[in-house]
Image (cartoon, helix red, strand yellow):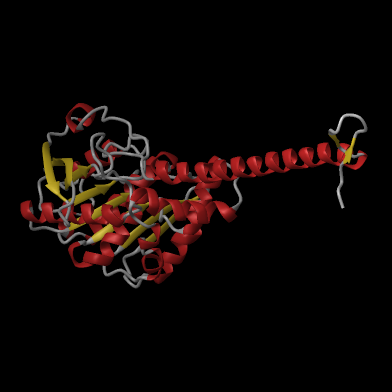
Length: 339
């Protein structure tokens, strides 16, 4: 049955009353539907783009340039050194500060920092180690150099680079090697110890940070208050797509459950909002070495532990190193009892 009618005398088709009413409504419904779909596509694109941006920038942190060197900062003679990572995929630049013994401390800097770690402040520690007759190696991880194509990998590649630093020291000294790590550099030291624990005689781990799902979300939330779902799964999805390496390769379960063959001094603050101190307490409980120690500093923040209690920090870290040193007769040299 036809829904149109002929107008008498003209032979033209005219819409019925029903058509006059329903056609504009249909057009409005289509318009509203199109707007809703466009809005949903826009929101989805913004959501995906935002989390892709997080995954991209996470692997490429801003790094400040070097401002000084050991001689200018604290009057320590040093040598510029370059060495490859153990897997040969990156070359690392650093400073070697010779001491008067065969004992060496390698500093392992944190995420977003370089070999200077001015907020620690690392030059003060290097000067005290030199007074204690230790050699000191300060170096930059591969993602730090502005012309490098390397990215931050949460310790996957960085542990290979720290192994390269250990290998370099073994070529120039036959004595014990100690790792002093900060934040993600401490987490990298633990990953390194899983691979070559026998080459490390002891570790000091300041504000240990591991890039596991909980700490990743914890730090994302410090920047922007996003829900754990879908934000965390999206970032973990985009990270390998954009950066070529999956955060699932970080062996955080093994790192936190291992009893390491060397003594470890864990130092952490109760107000560390990047890496809650409970994880460090749990790791310390796993350790079997009687010389391992744990120091939780009240109200101290992430990587600001030295600044919270500078004298006590220096005294306790140096006493730890000297107590586990293979040359105990040199223990406590030059450390005032008042510290």
